[in-house]
Image (cartoon, rainbow, N blue to C red; front, top):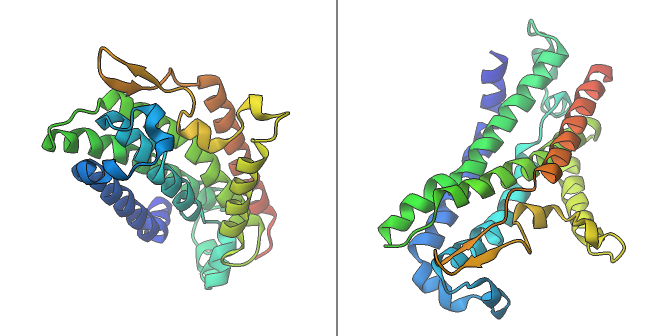
Length: 251
């Protein structure tokens, strides 16, 4: 019942994000001939005139990636504090379940929704490519789905944690967005740039893509498992902190 309740509360946000991502990915593939001529000169080094470079430029390293990262902030909004704002916290606390069970159900459903959203480009781009007589490997798309889920998990966790500890309806998403902007700016600082702390770089495999002349495809390097493990660990720490904070809150 708790999982179903968490789904009901988040399904509108999830469906809207899913529709936005799917429509954009479909447009990138189906109208690649019309979009390709307007790509900027900065993308020429990635062989953007090829179909795989075109998909990478606009989906996995471009607009769709940014759209995904920003919209995941809203997917992560949760906690009993928001229910108190909406006047439903007392009803939720009256259910035959502990606060731990309630909050974990919200996080689990949110992470499951995040996994589905991460897979949407992989489930839509390769089959749609066939319709326009192009080819994009499913394994390559799945590679980026793993990156999107792992990097998206820390955005989700940060949004969830901030929505638990900060009052107000819009405080948490604004704070999470500012933290993402701070991360992007601080990671360009020369003393730390070598560590490649920019989350968006990791999500898009920036500076690790290479051209395979035999396959005529723009391909990625192997997944950075060590970095992804650190990201997932930090996300789990923030979710654990959200659970701890919820147990201490007075409703």
